[in-house]
Image (cartoon, rainbow, N blue to C red; front, top):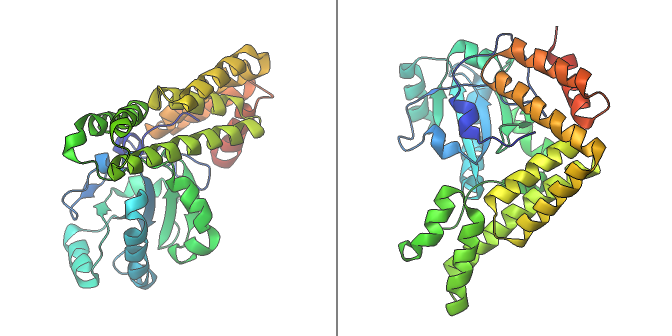
Length: 320
């Protein structure tokens, strides 16, 4: 599916039209949230990050018992691009006291009941791991996370997160391109400076991180190709071309796109993937019925493609 920034997903404010119980492979339902701790945290800070979302209550003993675990998870992986976020529907006064008493170190947001309901929460605590594109990767009890989602798998996901070593102000062109999301240009600017002085450790670290990110995206596209999800692979390759322009991997991605578009079956799945993403936009906008209608259209019009199968899975899971 097309990659959307998590901030864009979370910023949408209209709730889905029906209650669902989303899980691994589903798009994350929308929520806006009222942030009141971590004054420097905003939706924009979550853009390009992996989010560990914990749904909790102040009266829930098991929720409180997990606070040290979540604090540790946040501290251990924050620098790698993981943001632990807690959400509740309770009052600010209750939550503020709880945060202070139990020393909750991670950001907390108060959401509307209907926004939370879209996750189909049946017990507390319930946690979800959300990828950089807003796709849910795991759902369960926070205490079971490390047992059910391996550290190796988490590292692979974090390789896609937009987080970089600190860039000194004297290398402004590198930082400027990173801030714009022009990672290929940032890599090239760093390369120019390293050609003059190869000992600039900060720029070597930046280059290494950019290479890690593009390799992760190329691997993700290759996995989609292996699964014959040609449309999904093409959309990932398009993102690589846009984000890493000027790097060899972007050229390779462009070549892959040409090859896919030249094959009739692949081209059909590419069209299906783009219509699928249109349906997902309706989903994230809170127009759940419209999304299902779009998914049914994809399943019928592009029958036999990988994207059609994906549409059918969502219809079977969330349809009437």
